[in-house]
Amino acid sequence: MIMSKKIWIGLITIIILLIPLAGYQFWYVPNYRGDDYYTYVGESYKEIIEKDDAGNDHREYYYNQDGYDKSGDKKLLKFNSALGRPIKADNYLKVTYNDKKQQVISWEKVEKSSVPRKPLEQLLK
Image (cartoon, rainbow, N blue to C red; front, side, top):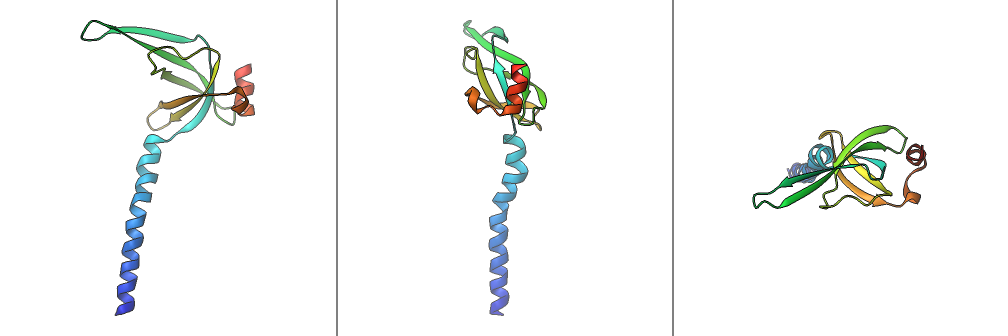
């Protein structure tokens, strides 16, 4: 009887520990993680100016450009600067693309030396 109680407690503990892991794997990863692509930012943005309710200009800067994963495979990346100004020209970016959402979920500036060889070769063509 005591052994059976210990087994049940052990099973319940395992189940309780697996719930967050399953949530991470089946909800968080598909929605908030993605594949990394590398791109080079020049002066290739589209500026859109909209007026807010107070009549002030609100500027957004959109980018549509090719990015390359670590294998050198290409994907068209569409994203905005989210800075209120364009991204500085002549910069390399590491962009995270989420396939489920079909969108860029984050980007960060990286040094040319940290871009993997295959994407760098594609970007330099």
